[in-house]
Image 1 (cartoon, rainbow, N blue to C red):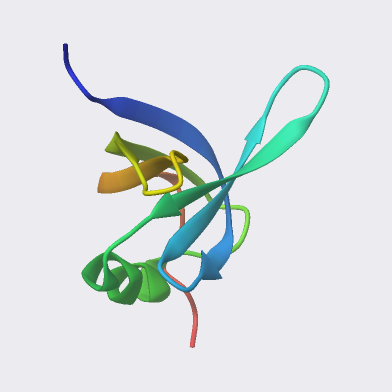
Image 2: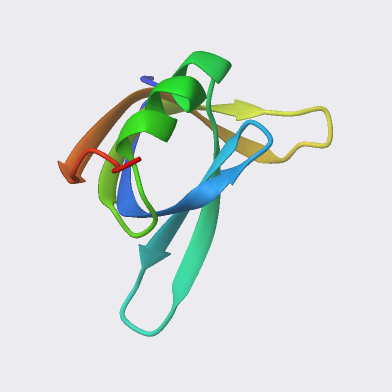
Length: 85
């Protein structure tokens, strides 16, 4: 079995080492927390702003409390402009 996840949504921010992604359904939306490395976080700060549409490729892990964790391995910008300083 292959452990692979692809999810798209709107970037809402970063808390600690988790990227917050707003994923919309037909009747509601969810904020999905995705683990990212410090390297991803540093690079994202230069290019991403709130509500940019992105796609995340990664894999699923289970933590010690048996919670599902999504770990990002690739982030693709579906709509973005370089952040202005």
